[in-house]
Image (cartoon, rainbow, N blue to C red; front, top):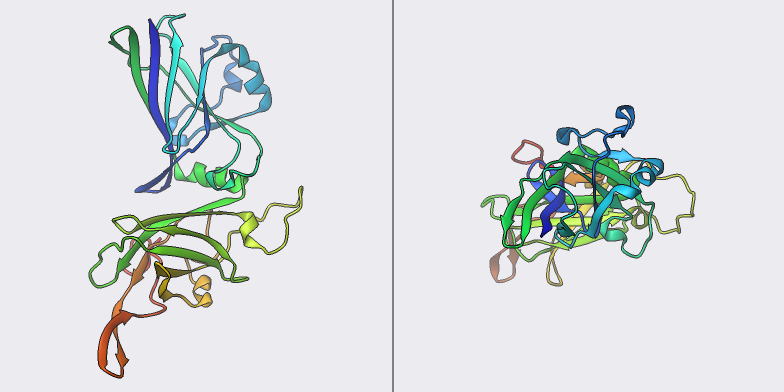
Length: 288
């Protein structure tokens, strides 16, 4: 007999948008009854994961039961032989070395305790199977991303009048301070996009090892393309607007584009009005 634990680990960007933990390492430990209560990391799932020190990780090395990496969707599969009663609780930790947009950089390794759980095992043939899922709250994930010097911006590109999501568009984000391209992404069939970048995209110069981490985010403005055709762009001054200035590591910015008409020699033809993208939080015109 063996055990199979399957599941997913992801993080909230906003109330209705998540991103998977890509290529993170999940570790499962047997519990240790003598583990000092005062040293226990917090296990309240609503408060988010508790960060572990190197000493705390080292102290539980002998209790490691199994570990595996998460795939591009944050999914995992873990198996181990039946060495203990399946009614025992398990400790689950996550290990991060970099964010998805930092694949060519070896960052600082950080460890977080997700919780202590007793999986609901069900027998299937010659093994016991259970599932586990965890979603990191947006406040915690924003802080984790800040520690790694990275940002993620998510949202939807819509036509203002029809409110329909616009598919297969390329969204480009620029730093209003130096007009550098920070990152780009394509919209899905519902007009949704997720765009990521790191602190090295914020400046044209090299960032030296040991240099103080930038504390505030960039001021953002956008351009939107269909293939190579520029459909719509904002003025850099848009980056000074509320919701665009000093964007936090986890941000939601919805882009609304209004249809208009453009005069040509032969008459009027449909077109796009420049400078009509605004950000939202609980508003029809302002979206983040």
